[in-house]
Image 1 (cartoon, rainbow, N blue to C red):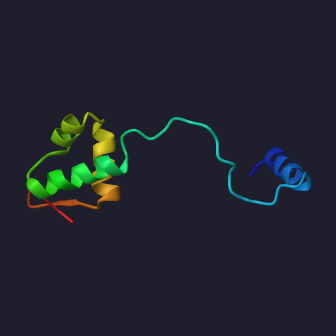
Image 2 (image 1 turned 90 degrees about the vertical axis):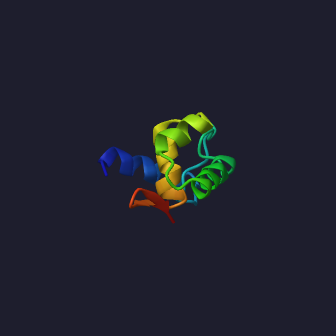
Length: 86
């Protein structure tokens, strides 16, 4: 951490801040990685184990990256012998 960042942190804590977590900020809402889309992706894989990530992304109208993130990181499906398995 740079000296400037250490000074800034010391100043904020001496001003009375007591928590280490970042203060919530306004930003863009999640539109692709929602609970509804996660449920739809799960249903799609349960109905057809041979479906591709591109087909999922096209069906839901989301990017390939978000479809892959939902599949691999959230639902935790892996490709085994050309089929998706939990």
